[in-house]
Length: 366
Ligand code: A3P
Ligand code: MG
Ligand code: MG
Figure 1 (cartoon, rainbow, N blue to C red):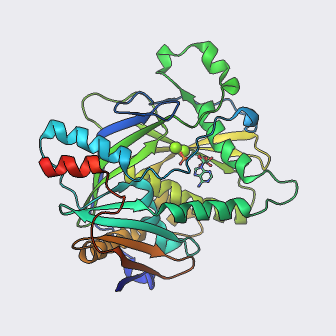
Figure 2: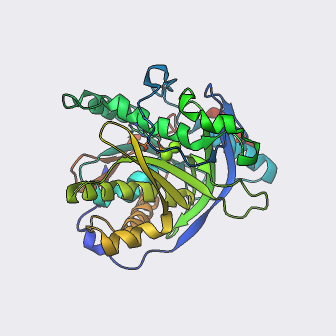
C-alpha cells in the first residue's frame, strides 16, 4: 500500500510561515583528515577572507578526495546521540532524526520540479529515523558524471574541486591570533583534502515537528562561544559570476539551496566566492542568511519563497508522522518531475540498516 503527498497546487503553502524553532547545537563530532570519526570539535575551521584573483583549479592533480561510495547510514549521528544520551541518562525526545541534507531536499521540493529523491525511514521508540537511499544516490551521481561537459568547458570533477579549493583558501586551522602570517600567505599552496569535517548536531523545529539534524558546517567567523550562545557559523559557497538576467535566475535558484541548508542548522552567514567561467576567484560576497528570502522576494525574479518552503516542509512532516506508524521500513520517493511524494513500505519488520545495532542495543537498555 502506498500513500501520497501532493506537492501541487503549491498555492496552498502561501502565507505566513509555520512556527519555527531556532536551531540549537546540542552536540558535535568531527572526521579527521583520514575521515576517522572523532567525538569532538577537532576539525572545526576558522574563516579568514581569501585573496582574490586565485586560480581555483590549482592543485586539482594533488586533490585528496574522499571516497564516499560506502553507505554510512546514520552511524556517526547515532554515535554522537548515544554519547549525548549517556550524559543525560535519557533518550532525546524528537519526532525526527536525520541528516540535514534530507530536510534540505524536503524543503526545496516545491521549487525543484526536476529533482527526485529516495529515502528510507523507520519508526523506533516514537521517533522517525530517516536516511538517504544510498543506491539511489549512487545512481544519480553516476548520471551526473555521464553528462558530458561541453567541449572546452571544465569537467564536473573540476567544478566540484573548485568548491573545496575555495574552502581551503578561506579557512584557518586555528583562530586568527594563533595562525601564522606565513600560513595565510601560502594558503594557495595547501593540499586540498576534503576528508576532514566538522558536523554540528542541532535540535530544531518546524511546525509540529521537533527534529535532531546533523550536518557539516564549513567554518566559524570568530570562535565557538563556550556559554551556549548562538555560534557565528559561516557557510562557504562558490558560484559563477552573474553577467545577465539568465545568470541571475540561475543564481537565485542556487541561493534557495544555500538558504535552506544554512537555515536548518542555524548558520547565520553565507560567503559566496564568485568566479569566472574558468575558475578564477573574482569577488567575495557576505550574505546574512536571514535576509536572503526577503531580498529574493523584493529584488529578485521571484523564483522561490522561503515561507512556502517552511510551510510545505511543515505539512509534509505532519503527513510523514501520520503515515510512518508501526513496524518496518518505508521508502519515501519523489520521482524526477513528479508532483507527488510517495511513501510505501519496503520491509514489514525491523529497521533495515537505518539504525546501527549499537544504537538499538543502547536504547533498549536505557
Ligand atoms: P560549492 O558549493 O562551492 O560548489 P558545501 O558547500 O555543501 O559545504 O560543499 C562543499 C563543496 O563540495 C561544494 O562547493 C562542491 O564543490 C562540492 N560538492 C558538494 N555537493 C556536491 C555534489 N552533489 N556534486 C559535486 N560536488 C559537490
Ligand atoms: Mg561544507
Ligand atoms: Mg560550503
